[in-house]
Length: 121
Image 1 (cartoon, one colour):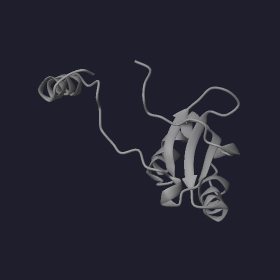
Image 2 (tube, helix red, strand yellow; image 1 turned 90 degrees about the horizontal axis):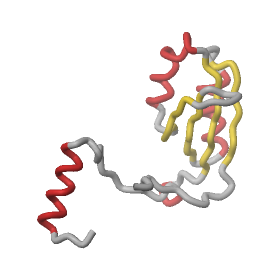
Image 3 (spheres, helix red, strand yellow; image 1 turned 45 degrees about the vertical axis):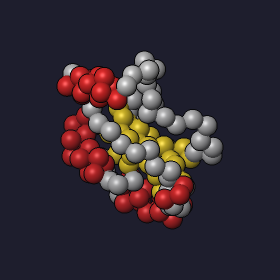
Image 4 (cartoon, helix red, strand yellow; image 1 turned 60 degrees about the vertical axis):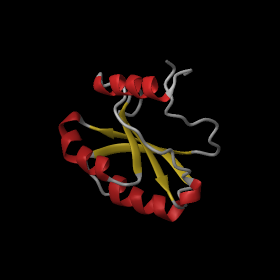
């Protein structure tokens, strides 16, 4: 940035005060933590049933992102697991036994090409 520490901290404080910076975190290596299986799970939930299941989905440790999307499915979960058994246990517990979910499809990450939380500003 070309700033000395004091102006830099002042600039960061202004950005935090304005709500531009909403948090700070460490970007962890999932594989080194044993979470080598990344799966995107698409699901269909009716709007009437969304409230009953969304809190459960949001509270699941395996779900690292949850989105409403357009297309054939209306929700997308980015999930991480240790292995296929871990994935299937989650899938069985959350997807197969939940009558609120009317359809699903899973896509397994074969290779992570890019991952960042950096925004193009």
